Length: 321
Ligand SMILES: NC(=O)c1ccc[n+]([C@@H]2O[C@H](COP(=O)([O-])OP(=O)(O)OC[C@H]3O[C@@H](n4cnc5c(N)ncnc54)[C@H](O)[C@@H]3O)[C@@H](O)[C@H]2O)c1
Image (cartoon, rainbow, N blue to C red; front, side):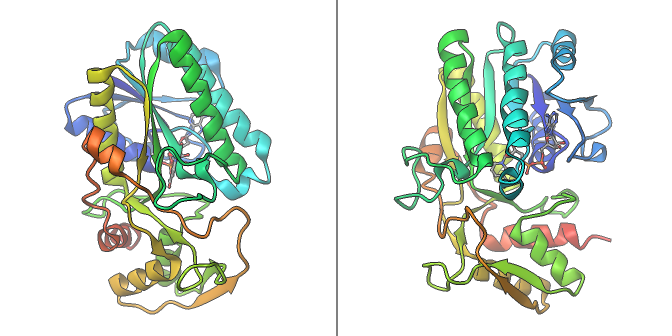
């Protein structure tokens, strides 16, 4: 199958490209390289450098390739920044996706969307099911929810069938440490804690007065390898059922920030100085997934998502020489 991977030079997208190649599919990557890296994509993979906001460029990509499906990772993904620059997030995450849908209509009818648990905001019930009330607390989360709504109507009107994959916290690296997260602006706890240890600097932790057992936020970490596999399963689902749906992709377990930092210390064998700062706006105290729908319907299996595997693979990647 020939599959367009937007954002394929980014953190999660690069793992998708690798998994598609292993599966015998032909990925084609579209990425602006604003955040991603050319070297994250193998040289023999067809690569289009350009922006989804440039509709003529998107038209050219589709004119040159008949795609069986689109996997859409390309977006801005920093919740904090989205509260300072809302227009940047609404434009890229909605208009960029709209250009893609408009060009693909009548040509490609299967679409897999990188959604997020941020669409739920602070959930009323935990673990979070797909039916949980959607009340995003950041422009980032709102932009993803709005695009889910766009997809709903493109299914009804243009028959583009989609799967919304709502990732919890993507984390980890290749088990051999050769591929991993490489963000110039890094906001995720695991890479930041590892880098603090490697650079012998204190780690800044936001908030220690949350209503959780140790006072720090609780999150669900899902290994990128398990995420990539779930996209293949979602693609099979679209081919078999030709119907749209949404799935939570999380490990189903919640770990507090302090538990994560303990694991980073254990894996590295080093100590870590923690500097506490005030809570950040829009950080729910506790969220983790009910992943039973993805397990039952897609066959999702988060087999690499135990915290030790997540942290030790990331540590191998970040401490490579
Ligand atoms: N990382 C997570 O924990 C997480 C959690 C939930 C959802 N997501 C979603 O998954 C997707 C991938 O996340 P990631 O962590 O790999 O992000 P990333 O920033 O590493 O990758 C996104 C890629 O898209 C590209 N891009 C962005 N806007 C573009 C545009 N207009 N045109 C062309 N290319 C563009 C960037 O250059 C980058 O390579 C995003 O949509 C994100 O919102 C990520």
